[in-house]
Image 1 (cartoon, rainbow, N blue to C red):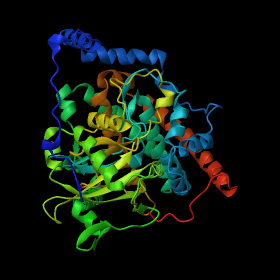
Image 2 (tube, rainbow, N blue to C red; image 1 turned 60 degrees about the vertical axis):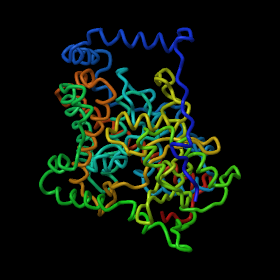
Image 3 (tube, helix red, strand yellow; image 1 turned 90 degrees about the vertical axis):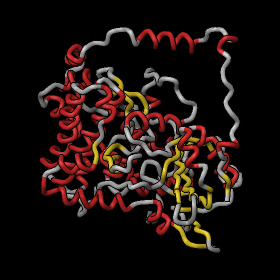
Image 4 (cartoon, one colour; image 1 turned 45 degrees about the vertical axis):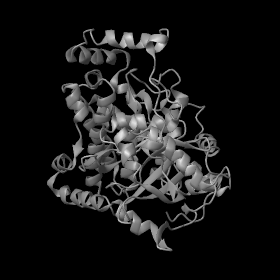
Amino acid sequence: MIDVPTLNDRKPRMARDQSAEPATDVDHRAEALASAFTEPMPSVEQRMAAGKALRERVPRASHGAFERMPKVDPLAILAAQATSRLAELVPVRHARMLQSPFAFLRGSAAVMAADLAGSPATGLQVQACGDMHVANFGVFASAERQLVFAINDFDETRPGPWEWDVKRLAASAFVAMQHLGGDKSQREAAARAAAESYRIRMRRYAGMGQLEVWYDMIDSKRLIESLPPGLRGAAGAVLDKARRRTHMQVLDKMTDLVDAQHRIVEQRPFIVRSALTSKGRPVGEAIGHCLAQYLDSLAPERRLLLSRYRVVDAAQKVVGVGSVGTRCWIVLMRGRDDDDPLFLQFKEAQASVLEAWLPDVPVPDAPTNHGERVVRGQRLIQGSPDIFLGWGEIDGVHFYIRQLRDMKGGMDLEPGETTPTGLIEYTRLCGWALALAHAKSGDAATIGGYLGKSDVFDDALVEFATAYAAQTRADHAAFEAAAREGLIEVAAVDRA
């Protein structure tokens, strides 16, 4: 087993002797921040009026337009992404994206970022998710062991326009409904539900106090109460299933006993055991070094808790659709005994797909580790993140780290598993969760003032979603043609 460094092994940080140092930019920034606390803030009414005034420059109806810029080449964008991924897994990613236009949309956040770069925007910034589609929501356990519904994927998070997240969400709702076999009216209803819910909830958050917004969450009780009576039973089943998804379940599912020790079972190419990293470094050494860095990213009480565990085993695992090919390690740890397992997931964090298209949008105190970027974004907009959420580095590759499974669950968005009515209500929940995330990180009153009480914005998003769904179908068809012609390599079997 690999020892995780304990608190006693760690060198204390040296206190700064401020009296011996000249004033720095940090000191001046602190003075500026201190003075800002004494300046009066515009009222909610003033901020909503400012948002309403933005309609003169960016009419709400203008968000309905979509026309791809000639420089956007989806196949070239995806090929460029593949160069930074594990070459042997890129064909698996292609296979997953080929399954349907919905799967293609999920895996092509970089393409949509390029498409949105030329779209109308108010200039109002939030901590954007960056990959906002209906499959990137779910339930998970808060630190208080409540089930909470929220965004659950932050790989692409970065400060950016609020409009980009809402447009991708509405488009994904339309495409997901198409995937389920819904007719034209149902597709439009799904997109509208996402946009309308976002608008209504954002205006409600505009009238709430800052702490009230910060503490707000969609817990299981509120989730069930928001649904029509006919859907509450199905939602309750999803929640019950999530409650059973614990570390003990993972232990039973992913490990076997070998010489009286639990070991992760290899399932090539989706779960692979290796003695060395891609850089030829012993896996145990690399994991131990990363955990030492990771401890620095945790609060002291979480460091103490983690230091009571020891690494037992590790393996690489294929994850997601858009994430396939990025590096991911599953680490099994043991606490008191075999009945006290902890599974951590080390997931690679590359540059956000938004980064290339938002060069003028600053990232405050920009982190040097993309894992830290992901963690900071998640902590800001998710509300109740994993208690072990942190970051580290292996062989120069950035990772964010979290529990592999902690009462996590989600909607099965496949034909036969979800009804059109269920999807419409689900997208309404997604719009609510996105509004909450944006209200935590942006100015809810100004955005709410811009959105207004009418359905003008909702209509525009339905128009946009319709157009972007057609573009997604065309892109998926082009991707299929490239596969047939041998221009992209596709894995023969994808069982994961």
